[in-house]
Image (cartoon, rainbow, N blue to C red; front, side, top):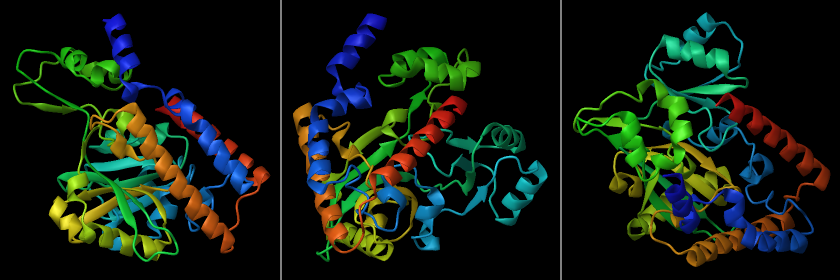
Length: 346
């Protein structure tokens, strides 16, 4: 079993470690640093977001740039406050179970949880070491990602990627235990240790025929979500929706994660909620789950890096300066330290 999993990973680039996948094209990133004379050449890309949204920016920072009606109802919580105070704040905000909790500064679905009751909330509150958010759970049936960029000297942007997300889940057959279903699942079987940590108490449970069990509520590729490419759905209406959102926020490059009632509603600019968006550090995740070759994936990534470089260079010439080496190094070191701690608590 282990040997088979090893070879599956070896011959499927989508399962490779992030650093291994990106190592062959890293010199191109370095070349943009040299051309810009800045290790942080991307920082002017999104002038209203700290570090250009490459890493370490908070959810609060992003939500304040968007209209309140298209963002989830959210409160920000400091760890250590009395639980009664937390409960009062949640109730006053009109947020009801089940709801979502996650770090204000987070990534890759770390410490993302759906909270069903007081007991779960109290355990999460006692466990998490940093400021986090309590957020209404959006029940729109469709979750998508939209990769968008716009050159600052142009009035219309580009939707370069549009994908539908399916959360990591298994479906019961009336005979198999959860553990057996996980070991049979093409994605979950590569994450058995993580699954045991999260769902070990349910491993021997036999799921009824047709019963769906969500292994993760985070719609991230690194958390096992499956993507379906919706490139054929991109049209001028969809681009116009994100042109308006992005112009108001001075957002030039990155990826939106969205829940919507339907693809058509989103293209018409109605019945959707922005869960969050990622700036310069956003990966063009439409390279996954569409049968793309490794060479084509690299071509797509490099095309996006070129766009990022050109946007950043233009904005720098307009007065949005590159971060200094010292400032960027200090910020990135603090961000990575923050994430290492989060991973330990996850």
